[in-house]
Amino acid sequence: MLFSIEVAGHLTEDTIWSPVNNPYQVTGFVYVDSGVTLKILPGTVVQFDDAIMEDTGNDEFWFHIGSEPIAKSLHVEGRLIAEGTVSDSIIFTRTHNEPFRHWGIIYLTEEAELSSFRHCVIEYSGFTGYSLMEQIYGGIAVYNGSVKIENCTFIDNRRGVNLRSETEQIIIKDCNFQFIGPLLTIPYKLISGGNGCPNSVLIANNTFNSLMISSDTSAYFIFNKGIGLYGETFAMVLDSPDQTSDPSIIDCRIETFQFNS
Image 1 (cartoon, helix red, strand yellow):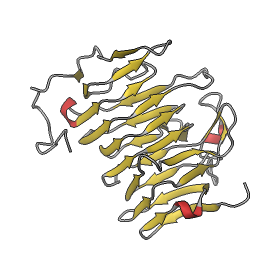
Image 2 (spheres, rainbow, N blue to C red):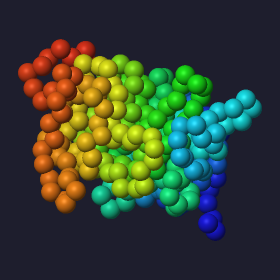
Image 3 (cartoon, rainbow, N blue to C red):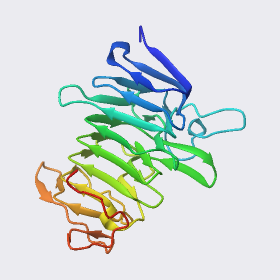
Image 4 (tube, rainbow, N blue to C red):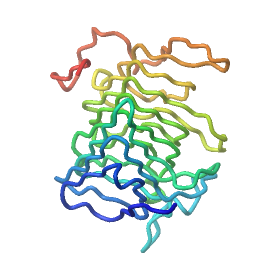
């Protein structure tokens, strides 16, 4: 890599990342502080320092006293707006394009504001270990209960989208979830978690090349399709009491939630 913009540390004021400075090299954990918005423009490439991930015991993904993991992450306590276009996607990826190498996570913390991702490619994320009791996974780890993810592609992430905490307003639609890389000894899931009422989570019109969606994902799950081994497509209907395609369910904690927003 001849030229790159290295980024690390706390963003304390509103910040814009532009493709003029491609690529942004995340060499240390980046923290979007409370009240701050990080806006990423179409065509921007964000590369994270990565490490080989063979299982969840890899030290390179764990915090240790006085040091952060080698595999870097983006923590959001404010707001992240990453909205690309059809012709200019925003890319979140690893630095070294080699098998088994992964970076950390995009972590929307409990304090984060409503963030949005459109026309993004999120690939090769792993996890971040904070303690023996706290390992966070997710190309996008949603711990604040609210996010809009539309027209994005997820490739070979330890978790594509990880929903935690009480879900409030989550939209995941028109996305493509793929697992195509070498399989590790640890399981992959395309979407996992989420314990709000189904009507607070919309998962619609997505394409999956695997059925690896957690049974604990409560969601309004409609018009999604899977791709078989030979390229055939089929409608995906998940058989779980917490996953529904019944639009008559109205027990939703957010009365103003609009599925067509």
